[in-house]
Length: 391
Ligand code: FAD
Image (cartoon, rainbow, N blue to C red; front, side, top):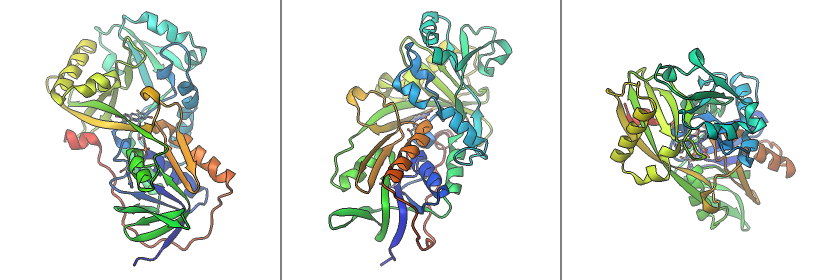
């Protein structure tokens, strides 16, 4: 029988939500332990596009919505962390782009008029032309308008690596997790036969939250999955591009981000409308044909003759909402010692941590004295999806 461990906050899930929370708690003097059943970041986080949204994308229909207001402050907070003077020291994390761009392929002037009718949007975007255009759009054949958004794009694998460093010895590779109850109350978890007691237990295991809740006999908070069918391509001719391309609807027609592969080439990662419902219904071959057609239509000067292609199916995990509407904020539910959260966006991990700190503060949960942790098996870092699919 392994000795029982004690900690202040026991976190389940080593994606951005759990790792960010863990680092904040440790910095505030709390003892923590984070359990990960697969690899750090390997759920949605390293499969994300790494855009730290400020909400402008959601203002495409003219008015700022709740979503835009809630995340408007995130780029500033992340920038400070990256500069080493924010809530966490992320100074070694690779910034892929200091801005994300919004590009209208020329025929959608009306759409942009309503977009810029919002004063809050006008303050956060700036039109760019000629030499200031992203390299991939700097072609004599390019028609359209391009706007620089106050949003940034991060290299998520390096972000996860840095947060794993900040976790120190508080990471534990876990296979079997079961509730630990005393007099009917949840007091901790039993992990691979070892009891771990904690003042608070936080489930932030992305899509894994549903199963963890079911093991406790709980059906609330309910979770929804939003399937996506993303496309990636790798070619020597690709230069980095970070942009939403406007389409006819309120969502971007295409969202392109670019990621450095280990062999020095760039991988373009394509999301937006392409990856949503109709894209999900397509098989891999038809999805690649559609993506190729989109790029040929929008950026015909890009040489794709040597491109290698792959698709990636991945679900976003979020709190259940009616008609799969996009949630506006990080989400937190509480029940006794148990807290359950979904950041709903990588960018909103700081917002989820704020909500958890507010809960600890309200309940006067303070750092307590615990014996040092023994050496524990550490979960591995996830490999980027493009290295797996396009080696
Ligand atoms: P995850 O990253 O899924 O991490 C959950 C972790 O919990 C995993 O490591 C998993 O292995 C672990 N786990 C699961 N079950 C258990 C268990 N029983 N025990 C222990 N561990 C467990 N957001 C943005 O802000 N910007 C973007 O550009 C962006 N692009 C995206 C693109 C795609 C294709 C997708 C899918 C999402 C994107 N998002 C983006 C959303 C963002 O990725 C997610 O909101 C965020 O990564 C969720 O983080 P998380 O830590 O909650 O979950």
